[in-house]
Every structure is written in C-alpha cells, then in structure tokens.
Image (cartoon, rainbow, N blue to C red; front, side, top):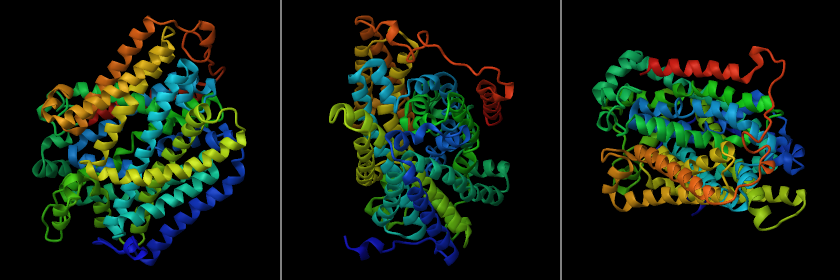
Length: 578
C-alpha cells in the first residue's frame, strides 16, 4: 500500500477548520511531551510498571476509570444503546458500581499487601506457577485483542467523520501511544489518562446536551424512541421479567448473575488493565479510595455514552429528513453495505458528532474521541507489557535477570504489543458491534478468572491444583460454548435460555455458566488435593491475614463511608429509571 493510498479519503462528513487542526495537533504534541518528560522517572521496574507506587487516591481513581473510558466505551456503548436501548446502562450501574465497591473494600487489601505486580502475580503466590501461567497467557492474549478494538474504534471515527483512510488512522494513532508508553511506562499512561478524562468530558458532553435539546427534552425523547423503535428501549428493569419483552432478549437472571456477579465482578476486580492503576496508589487508604472515586464518576458516564445512542434513535436523519437506520457492522462493511452507504451501530457517535459540531467544537469533540482511544489503548498496552514481562517472560523464559533487563523488556514488549494490536484491529469488522465482541472476550477470559481469584481470597481450603484446573476448565468451557452456538445457532436456547437472545444476552449467560464451572471444578479438585499450610497463606487469604484498618480517622476520611454514599446514589438512580 502506497502512502498515497493510505491518505486517500473516503466519503467525508465534515471538514476540519484551521482551529480544529490546531486543537488536534496540540493534543498529540502534548501527550508526546508528557512521555518524554516522564522518561527520566522510569528508571526501574517499579517505576515503569507501577509508577513507583506514589499516586494519590484522586489520580489513581481517575486513571482507574479513564483506563476503562476509552474510545471503545464511547463508541461501543453508544452503538449498543442504539441497538439495545437503555438496557446498555446496566453495564455502567449494576455492571460496575457493586464490583468497584467490592474491589475497594474487600480485595484491594490483598492485592496491595502482597505487593504483587499483577493479578497473575497474586495467583502465583496463592495457587502456584501453573495457575499463574494460564492466567497470564490468556490475559496477555485478551489485552492485545482489546487494544485492537480501541484501534478499530478510533480508526472508524477518523474514517467516517474526516474521511481518513482506515489503515492510516490506525498507524498514526498507535505509533503515538507506543512512543509515550514505552518512554514513561505506567506513570506516563496515568498522567495522560487524567488529561484524557478531562478532555473526554469536555468534548463528549456536547452531543447529549444538543441531542436532548433537539428532541425537546427527556419526555419527548422517550416518545420519539417509542414511535421510531419501541417503548421497551427506555426501561431499565421493568422489561426484564421475560426474554421477549426487551430488545436484548435477556431476563433479570442474566443481568444480575451473568453481568453483575460474574462478568462485572471479574472485570473490575481481576482485569489487570484497571487494577494496575489502583496498585499504583501511594498507600492502602488511597488504594481503597481510588475505586470508590472511580465509582462515583462511573455513575455519571451514561450521560455522555448511553444518551447519544438513545438520541440517535430519535433525531439521526439524512439530508432529506428521513430517519437513518443503522445496521450491524458485519452488514455495513460488506461490499453491498458500502455501496449502499449503510452505517453500522458503531458509527452512532461520529455521526452525531458530525451532526452537531462546527469549527472549534468539532476539533474538541474529535480530540475527546482521540483521547479516549489513547486512554483505552495505553491501558491495554501497559497491562500487556507488565504481565508479559513479570508473568510470562521472567518465570518461563529468562529467570533471575537484572531489573534493568526487565525494564528494557517492558519497553520492547510495549512496541510488540502495539504491533499485534494493529493486526487484531481488523478482526472486529466481523462482529455485529464493538461491545458484543468485547463482552464475548470477557466471557472467555474474565468470568472464569474471577471464580479462581475470589475462591483463593476467601477459602483457605482452595489448593494449587484446584485453582489451575478450575481456571483452565472455566476458560475452555466458555470458548467451547461460543463455538457450539457459532456452528449450531439452535444451541442458543440452551446457552442463553432463550432462542430470542441477542449476542449480548448470550455473552452474559455464557459468562455465568463458565464462572460456575470454574468454581465447581476448583472446589472438587481442592477437596481431593492437599492445601497449603495456613502459615503460608498470610497476606493472601481472609482468615489467615491481619487486615489493617484506618485508625483514628474521622467519618469523612473512611473509605467505607464514601462507599455507602455511592451505594445509596446507585440505588436511587436504578429506581428513577426503572
């Protein structure tokens, strides 16, 4: 492919003004400057992989959330809101808040006290090398696939809105991330994530506000959605009594147990992409407060992520005034779909951006999406680099090397991770939507991992062989269930309990079954094998560990108090949008 082909524009929705270009270029220069500046503070493995463990609760908390709030979230969940309605909000409320609070109050003490570099590192201490190996390899594989999704999301924005070539968009953005992460490590990623958090809100806030104004307020928006799609699209809980009464084809069991108790709990407590940010906190109290701060902001995110997708159901029209109907990515990307000018669910946000933003505002909006992409990709790349270096390379390939050697390996693995991610970005074109693809990955790798970790932390009788076989069987069973439905669609009624289930519902039930399989296998194998003596479980298991408490702290300085405040607001929001 020649440079001319890379730069050749496709159909362009908008054109950037000089002001827009200045804003975008300034952002790229700024993140690279941060990377070069922080290079001098990444001279050891602890500095590069865990930012020296000196982040405050607010910085760690915002980075914790920002690592999740990437272009993947902005584009993916806006598309899912268009596809499934307000049910997508569950992934931000019941699919996040309980798990984030559980991480803060229950699991962080063990991660922080053990001084592990990663979640697979904890499994090594608790269950031994085999369990660590399965976890590390599967997690490394997942992170590069997830990083590829972020690349794909960003490239779609630049392609749809600006007409930039898809491949060129991937290359220019990924090279930028590779440079600043390889230079400054996790500290560079965290500082940029805090910056990106601010930019995302500043740029993305325009679309839901203008969408509500055009629709005539929330009540009128609901009426228009009911007319254009279905009234079921605006109810959070009341349609979950039956599989056939909501656009996702799911019931409350899939949401409460599959999403809240398995996938969400697994993601927010065991996915090293987000846990790594909290481990960078300066002390245990800061490490416990960081997820609580993140949870408070997380509850507000649907306003900039879900609402644009809902607004598009009512206001997204072509120049003739006809309502635009979006289709799955697998349809829009076909030659016929391209020839007809079809747009996919994934393109909701860039289409709304082009609809509302003029010069200056357009540059800010695109910069917000670029910032989201950088945040999501950098999070996956830093997590991949750490797990590869400490949990695959060091124990399996080159043991007992110097800290400087592992530091260099971390930098090189960052570049390799980016390269692999570029390849995986093209896989996403074969899925119906970004978030269907992502939740499928979580059901493969995150759901079983949570079962293993939670049993390891709460049950002293869990053994090394139990942890290994439980994790392996849970992971393989999830992939096997996916393959079964892929080759025989009629199997959906067994996996998702309904033949009406959509891909997202299938993912939730698959996660639930794989989590149960992991727990059952772990328990059975543990009961027939010899456990570690309790003296070796200190700092790793409840009941064998002295948990430090905040002494003489006022009520307003206790993490448990703020967790309770967040929990109350969470309940109120679910009642309001019932």
